[in-house]
Image (cartoon, rainbow over all chains, first blue to last red):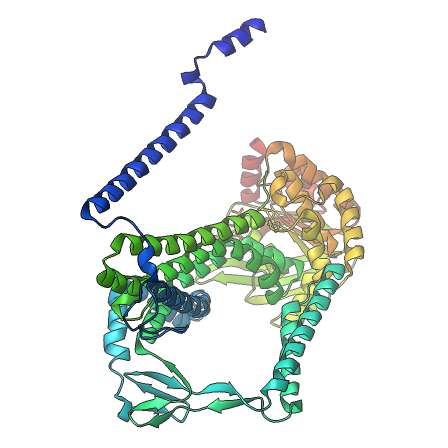
Length: 393
Length: 246
Ligand SMILES: Nc1ncnc2c1ncn2[C@@H]1O[C@H](COP(=O)(O)OP(=O)(O)OP(=O)(O)O)[C@@H](O)[C@H]1O
Ligand SMILES: [Mg+2]
């Protein structure tokens, strides 16, 4: 006993695994700190030697350039900071809409690949294979030059009835705008929404009590839909009117317009990313073993119940992490917008660099933004993994 | 033991070109315990899975509890409610607790309320000897415990017939007995059982009738006594001598 302890104590610390781990980590951290110190020191002294020390004061200067499409008020007299904000919002806009459509298309294609119908699954497989093997930049330039900029000129616009006009200056579609009944209707709409939520909560509570969870969100949504349709007829005057685009001189007015640049980057990101999402979805569903479906069937669950209660919850665990990283990829890939002329964060940043010469500062800001997106994504992923991890021994 | 609860007549099954079941005839009485054994690939699993329509037979008739298995989805659903199944690989739902595994069918298929389902699940867990595991997840249990949960899950639907496809083959030797004990108790309680197994001790003690399968056919059937002491067919003798050596 005593000899044992003394032997134990006699292990020199460089052979003690506990110390080895700590020492290894200390060395790595020290090396990293030294590396970054050296890089930053170099950068700062280099810039100082050139007479342009690192400074973000240029952000307050007037930008003096136009941006094709903005979500906020912006003009040539706005500051660089506002220009960057415009770019950031454009990045968020195309990423957000892109993520929604890429998910819808990806899920459909992914499920289609598992279809028992030979033709459907072949078409889906070809879609995935082709798109995964095209470099995104090539695909974007293809879309931009051969599709969206090859549409007819405004005067010869390709018309889909009165609903939409396709031109090389952009796509113009009909759009709902508030009409005289809107002021009343919006409150009725809000009321319908609240009631829909209450119905969903009611069904959810009932599900908790009985153990048989109804499709509470579906019932809530249907309630909302039904009430808002009823409210439409109850409200005095039509709540919404359709604003049709029309040709006014040399351009279209009214409706909603989408620039060819936006359409090119959006459709490129959606189509490209949907192929990867399709693979993620397919792998997730296939990861659930055949035995799970058989056991659920043997217990007597219908195929819809089997999907909802057994396959889907297990597939989601496999799908969500790679799916979020596809979302992140889409967001980062949106920086290729510069190739099709869509003014995203990176494109605006490039213009600012050309004009102000503040390359280091602008790149730092851009990197910080994308880093923030990444960190938020991985925070979400860690949280999700922690909450859905299968409990094992 | 007079009214057959399972009737199979000339059941055939093909996988593409491969003729997996070549005319199986079998009658199982209420409360009867049937043991099916035979070499690997002889169609034992295929046959037992036809009984609750996990596989579809292509010729012949299968009648379970008076309901004929056809393409009628109502009949299929009705039969699945009457027939419980236990798999070699347990196939518990890993994202649900033991309790949720057992109550899923009763709540969603039998439409029982949660309290009743949980009360019965608890009784079943006591019957299979692991009431203390109710709120654990399958991944936290040993193989033998998982298989006993799987038995409880099947029993929770209050089936008239239980199918077992090699329930102990994936278990370590020390866990086989705890599962066989549960099955033996179930047989004594009068459950109609169809068991694919090579546990010959269990067969001798519990089976009423044994069927020897080979190449998609029933080569020989009879009481355990007949099969073990006076096998008629050479293939049966050969197979028995091989598995009884170990
Ligand atoms: N889905 C399938 N597709 C094609 N062939 C199959 C399929 N399932 C089983 N088979 C074939 O049918 C035959 C019978 O298989 P089955 O699983 O019923 O045998 P078994 O008697 O249960 O064997 P084991 O003791 O190995 O479980 C085997 O030759 C097998 O290869
Ligand atoms: Mg088998």
